[in-house]
Amino acid sequence: MEGREHIIVCGIDGSAAGQRALEWAMDEAIRRTCKLRVVTAFTWDLGEAVGGPSSPAAARSQAKQIQDIAIARVLADTANPPEVERVLVRGAASESLCTSAMDAELIVLGSHGHSAVHDQLVGSTSMRAIHQSSCPVVILPDPRRADRALKRAKDKRREVEPPHPAPMF
Image (cartoon, rainbow, N blue to C red; front, side):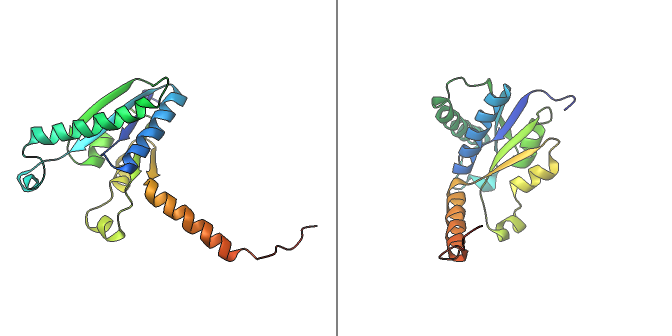
């Protein structure tokens, strides 16, 4: 892609889906021999202060801690890691990801698998990223949901399969 650098952007938020996305993005950056830019978005306003960070600086610090832990986990299992750029952005996750990926060739993020009602009311970060991004977007399912979906698919296949398949000639 013209005007793009060899960068993969990965959005993480401390979730299992975000960790899976980071693992996949790290492997892909190694495969493509490109830089990995890890983006963690955070927000803060007075309404969020109850039970959450007490200030914008505390929110940023919490986001940095989430990012540091996630990156350390992946690097511990990686023999020859690519260059990793760490980015903390105050703002909405989808907008922060897309802005951080203006020069990238790929965005990677995890899907939380919220309910349809949640996505209708609040919106899906994944869907907004797909619509706002200027580059391809890879969305990895939450590992817990993916495992359950795979089990359901296997169970369903067993229900459909005939007990004794007819011989093939």
